Image (cartoon, rainbow, N blue to C red; front, side):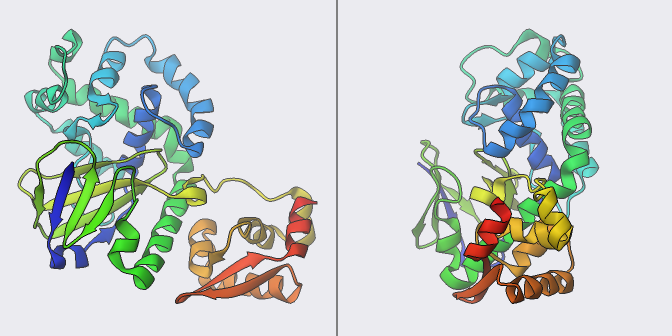
Length: 319
């Protein structure tokens, strides 16, 4: 199995990061048709795939590249390197793809590939074409909706951070992605593949959520930075673009209607702030009004206070 041995100090310094490039590469993998889809991706594909086919369907590079570089269980390393900062910008992350020497990109694609590289991938400019493809997916299918997606990913981070305070890293890491398990004693099973163990001793260990069905791992060869890209869990993996019923928004106001709609599953104030983009003060004020009206209630879960809809609140949303 793929095993990482993680030092206690490295794990204690682990950080959650939102990466627009990781989200884009995860969505690009969905366009290959070789990967399972999350609910968020199925909705996205309904509009993204026709546009993608119109632009890239007749391109002699895109098809072979996606087939060879993003395979089930494998992603060419140069397509995603751990970000050098905790607040990566898409342009900076994309520039690292474009700067990859073509020979390095080919070596990354050929690793574990049990067939010859597609002839078109031997042409000069491989990394530049790959960067062009990734950038197109971002600009034309993701960028406009990125603020909403980012809030959903940030809400997942908030939920996992809350879990960290109550159950420790074991509660956060166990089952973070398919095949991943915390074994104790600094041992993390990354996947079930037969890879040699890897010592994680660098100063930065990153956890990066995406809306895809599965994730992957990435690291710098010099061992300074390691990253686990993982699927955001359950309702947090949904694009929070859905709007409440129009009649409900007219009745209690759009901001309160949005919060009440999100309370279909219990959430903390911090999670609601991440999902809605409202300020902490505004969110707290709306929650007080909803509680006073008997539409929402709260309960304590460990160190967190979770808000949820009452039976009256459910009836109002469904009506």
